[in-house]
Structures are given as C-alpha cells and as structure tokens.
Image 1 (tube, rainbow over the protein chains, first blue to last red):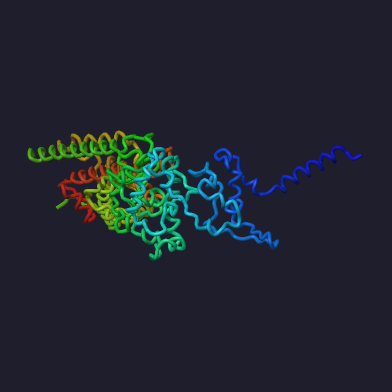
Image 2 (image 1 turned 135 degrees about the vertical axis):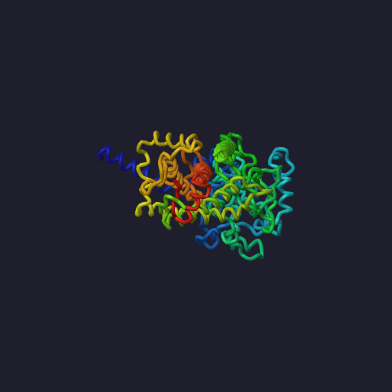
Length: 323
Length: 207
C-alpha cells in the first residue's frame, strides 16, 4: 500500500497542475472588475480578442487557424475600462449584439458609434455636466473638422472624469495633456485628421520658459481655449494665433488659472495670507500667489527704515547748520 | 587735502562691488516687477523681467564666488573674521555713536585703520549679508530657475512655495540692507566721501 504522504503529494501536485493549466483569461479577471460591472464574463467575449495584442483566427470549414496581431486602435485595456466612467457597461450596451459572432460582418464594421450627446444630451440626469454647452463650444472650436468627434479625444473605453474628482491634480493634468499629445505628439494619428504640417510641441513652445514645469503643472487647454465660466472644462480650442502667450495672464494677482485649472477646486485651501491660495495646494505661480501679510510687513519695514533715515538726515542737517 | 589716506579697496574689490551693486539693483527691480505682475500693467514686461532676472542672477552668483574665493586668498578676508568677539558691547557702542554721538561731533568709537576697515555694525551686517543672506538668496534662486528639480514637498508645503517665499524674504531683507548701506555710506566726512573711496580705492579722513 502506498504511504499516505505520497498520496497527499500526488493530490497536491494534481491540484496545482489544474491551477496552472487554467486558461489565461480567467487570471486576467480581477475581483475589482466584478465589483463595478455585472457583465464581466459577457464582456470577456470581446476582451479575449480586443483586450489582447493578438488573437486566434480560426477557419472551421478548412480546419486551420492562425495567430493574428490586433490593431492597436482596436485594443481596450481591461484595467482602464473597468476604472473608466463607463466601467459598469456591457460592451453590447453601446455596440451591436451581433459583434458577439466572429468573424464580424462587413455591416458591423460600418456601425455608427454613439457620441456623448446621444446618451448625455438634453437629459436632466446629466444637466450638471452641461453637455449642450460643451457641444456648442466644440462646434466653434478649431477641432470641429471632418471625422473629428468626442471620441477623438475622449476614449469612451478609458475616459475618467479626472478634473472633477482630482485628488492628485498633477495626475489629472498629465491625463488631460496626454489627450492632446495622443495626436499632437504622434504624427501618424495627427495626419489621420488633418493635412496640416507636423507640429513639434516642444519646438513650437520654445518661447515658454521652464517648459517642463509648465507642461507638468498646467494643462494645454489653460492657454489654448477660451474661458467659459459655465462649464468645468472649456472645449473651444482656439487657433494657435489666439492662444495665450502673455505671461501675466497667469502670472498675476487676477490669474486666469482660477477660471480654468482651479475653477471648481474644493475649498479646503491653505490660506495663510496667500492671494489665490487654492493654487498653492498644488503649485506656486510667481505673481499670482503673493502673500498679503508679507507684502504688508515688507511695506511697514521699508517705511520705518525710510522714516529713520529721513529723521537721521534731518538731525544731521540741523547739526551742520548749527556748527 | 585729507589728513589720513588709506588704500583699503583694491581693484578686484571695487570691480566685484560695482558688479554686485548693478546686478543686485537689476534683480531688485525685476524681482519686484515679477512679484507684483499684473495683466494690465507691469513695471517691466514679464518676459523681459524673467530674462534680465535670470542673466543678472547668474552674473551675481559667479561674482559672489569671486568674492568668497578672493576673501579666502587675499587679505580682504580678515575684515570678515572674528566678528563675534565682544560683539554686543561693541554693537551698542557703535549704535550709540550713530544715534547720539554723531550729532555731538564725538569721535568715531572704531576709527578706520588698515586692520579695521569696518565698524562692528558694518562687520556684522556685511557678514550676515554676504555669508548668510547671499548664499540663501542664490540657492533659492537656483532652485526657482530649475523648478522641475525641486522636491514636491518641503516641510509639508510645496517645494516651489518654500523656495519662492524664502527667496522673497531674503531678497527683501537684503534690499533693506542695501538702503541702510547706501545711507550709512553718506556718513563719511562729506556725504560723497565714502562713495569716492569705492571708486579710487582710498579711504580719506580729515582730522
């Protein structure tokens, strides 16, 4: 008879081997996905190809198969999707149910995508976001060109309302600026939308001092949009000739940053006598963040110094006259 | 004709001094303009101020290096040493002279000699200005010149805010020093005597 320990080892090995042999897809499904979405397993029908860099193409009739590369623009990152604003959605909420069959038919490839306004426009539920105003701004924007839609900047599979819930403003700025740079720093994407010459962002901003600090601390749209007080994020992108180039638009007591980047920031601000103190939670802008107390104190000290000097000079003159 | 004529300011000191004075004044005016920048009106256009401020800051920093190295290897350094010895009684004596004695025509409590170029008040203020104030101003200025290199948080506040506030405070203290320095320089035999010394290098006194 075999020893019980040996039997136990074999059993353990068997269990372990079944775990290792499990398909990769189930390992990719994180518990957090199930917390936010009721259709995770259904969605895997799409993600098993569109969540990967490659997929298996099978020809059942001729009994052959091949591994093909997924086009990068068709890949949806699971982590990003299940943390995006649309994280609770089933893929078929927006896409045709017919996509569940593969290969997809030609008709499906011409499927018209929903745009923001199709779901969010003229709906009281979303009134606070002012989608109608955003649409109006976009229509007046330089981005209002053929084949340019909301999705050109806001990928519905990964979009996050970063600015509205920004705990880490720098991360939100990075997220926001990357939206612009996706085309403006990638000529292949840029050329899909326009015939214009390539824009090299670093070169076209060579007039801007401390470029790195500016790019990390403010969004492109701070200078490249027209201020609109009724929406959180301005969408009227201006032609480059109308972009802000005057430093004092931001570097001054009446800084425009309060109407753009810091517009709806929470009021848990560190005051301490600083003008525009909400900004110094995250940054410090020369000219915009003067400290009123320091200004007053310096004026007082300077005034007293001058007073002493004037009085001393007066006494010296008087003494000289006497002698 | 002066009764007493001492060569106290060699050429390198005078050159250092004039560069220090001009760059400091430029930094002061451009600094004020940047600090109080406004979209409607600025003392000097913002970008022009930034340019002048940066260039003058670099010149001033190198010039400060010349001052420190010069003082290490020439006799001029001795005027900035042993400033703590018997400090408070000496300061008080000098203060009383400026406050009262000067109007009574009393003698200088610490007459200028080859070994004693500065009175105790001058010595302390120059040591603090040059060996404490200037390094702080330069270090905080360099930090602001490379804001992307600054630590995000210092003492639980933004690094940029920390260095900028330090820069502004030290800059202000040094500008007050400048005003007092300019005034005390009129306290020679005649209001222009000490300014003349900084041009020809000779300290002159009439007894």
